[in-house]
Length: 578
Ligand SMILES: Cc1cc2nc3c(=O)[nH]c(=O)nc-3n(C[C@H](O)[C@H](O)[C@H](O)COP(=O)(O)OP(=O)(O)OC[C@H]3O[C@@H](n4cnc5c(N)ncnc54)[C@H](O)[C@@H]3O)c2cc1C
Image (tube, rainbow, N blue to C red; front, side, top):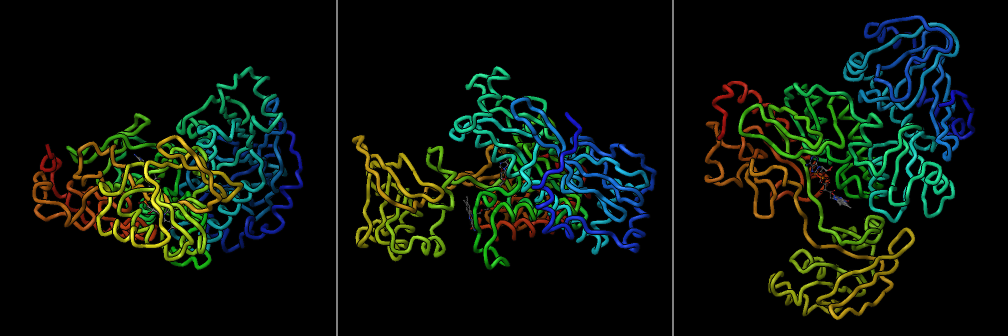
């Protein structure tokens, strides 16, 4: 990797508008408060204080001299050459660090001493103590860290290159994984980019071997899985597998992140296990308009990013690309077996693994989520398609209700079902309503076979049982195919309802509580196993909404505190359930 520091105008332009907040100068009083959490040391010119991808070391506050922040970027993708761009020079009173610092993950930048002097070095623990206890410095650090990460993402500078085709599912997965985890990357599309094809030729890679990821300007990963990517980029902090955490959360959607924020802020040793990246279903929404406190809406990515930073501020450990494979609840403390082969031990567990809406088997469907394809038919969506023709896919009651409701707003509603009719899947009262509502037509043995549009959905093709297809200029499709809970990994550990959602509190029957080991009954969000809770979309009877998931996730923490006390008072032997 070349060390030539290239001044790039894009970096300085980016900094101009936000420099004051991205790189605030500490006052003498703030510096004095930090001194008790760190250690001073001398620096020499050219010394690298921290390198890209190196073990995390907390932050450096410049006391005398100056320190360069250098961002790596792929300067010539054909040769994998990588150089460094100068982001800024830290002078006395300035400090290093960005979001990965707080997380304890490996960093995205190189810190190199320009003029010798001295720095105050704060360890990760020291930094966490400050952001948790000093509200003035906490605001200053958190704002700077978030803006710096946003700045790095917006700069487009990265030493990570993804080479693939936009038509390939794995390329989309890799890009989404990096985006959802806030990682900058350079995207090369083999269908459009001559550089991409040249790169494949140079490294003698066959088209069948794409997507590839050139990680940190060096290692070439062929169609890596999410874990391979996370490992190569050092996204997760190091963890000690022997630790028994107070509270282990499975899933970093709204429910899991809310629980992590409350639990960690209330002093519980909290660990989150997330199969993909923070945000869950909400993270895929382009604009959430009904979440309290955001009158002009907020994107799912922004909401997830804020919640994720907040959880880390309070010290929750979040492991992404870790999938829970099994919950061992036959002995306490409980153990979560994961896709990494490494266990996570827990005194209490929150199941917040959410649900997945049944979708259509169309590769470009994700492009239209929120831009013509919806999983809900509320007033919000109805307003979007006011006076237009729409499609409702599905033959269940939710599809029937949606069709009748939308008929009041839209020019025409087409119901598409694969079956020969609705009688077997929909209540008769809804069928009668559909039949008596003008402006609804039913298309049986019919399925959508293509979605088209640049940005927003513009055209839909459907195919009937006889093989004939027709295309229509339709801009709105409502998928009412039901949700599937992400609970297979529970493998008989806790009681589930028929579709597989986790039963909690008063919904549990005496039969389901036969092996219940405590004298009290289960708390409101507690499952059939003491100290194992469920919140959000994975829970039976939950309202499938962000605010509801956040409410349940935060509310569950008070029950976890009580369960921790009760379980600790009993010997592990008493709690053996089998
Ligand atoms: C496109 C879209 C738009 C939406 N828009 C809105 C809206 O505008 N307003 C609104 O109120 N609601 C909206 N919703 C619904 C809302 O997003 C969900 O109700 C909410 O996200 C549920 O939160 P959750 O945390 O319970 O589960 P999820 O969001 O489903 O998160 C679960 C998390 O668990 C992880 N996970 C799953 N299995 C495992 C495992 N075995 N191990 C580890 N991790 C696992 C998943 O990767 C995921 O990150 C929308 C949903 C979608 C799909």
